Image (cartoon, rainbow, N blue to C red; front, side, top):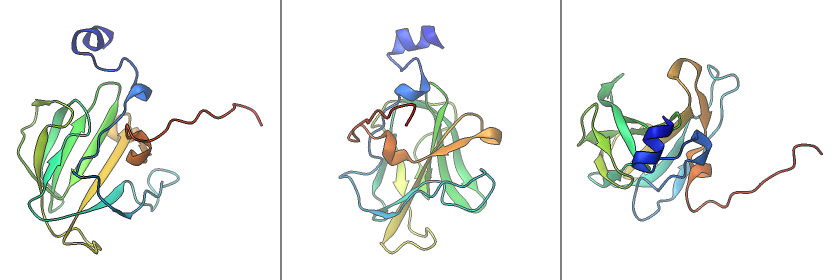
Length: 157
């Protein structure tokens, strides 16, 4: 992993990852992240972003495509980023294939209408998680955006 970070300029650690918006221009957030606790309980494991059908969807960071197709009746693209972060994008008509490497900002598909509960013409559900799917820790992708200010907090008190 460290060698790959040196060769390709990827972050050597997962917490060094900073993401780009998957829709351009930066969209309105129509539903916020609501972390499930524990992970198998109810919650909203991502954010819903307002868009329009056919709008290009972009990779939020350099990654490898780990899924592109139908899952439980929904069109989904999932990317594995260096350091253990995974991001998911739905409903998206994939323009990439499994195993393909994509650069940050590369088009991975097109937004499709039909996301349940979406108040816009189409909504992109954008999720992110650390670690393997079976033991993933869901995180708010908005907190990983390059445009988000990093705030350090004290360990005690």
